[in-house]
Image (cartoon, rainbow, N blue to C red; front, top):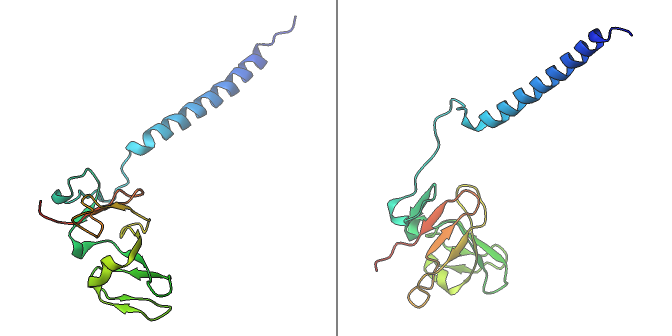
Length: 149
């Protein structure tokens, strides 16, 4: 019978190194989220008035996220970047003052942080004809229309 201890030792050594490498990779993957990268923490809390647990937010019509509206004349999309900007259609040259916002169909609100389409709605549809809140599903930015109850 031949002595096979030398081959067995080599086989066990290779298997041990592979197992150790796999274990090292697994531990590195598990600890990666816990390591700091040296950059300052960019976590920002939302304003108190929004009453949410979102990361960032604003309150008030002046801070309303950019809105996409439907043009009443040609049905094109109009971007109103700021709530105080006039509503100007780039296709048919309809020009409306910012106060006419509620007369137009709101297509979307866009997150000012990550440019994602926001979920929005009204809590008091009989009292207000503008959106009262908007939340970004991507970065959790939240906006609230400030009103008095």
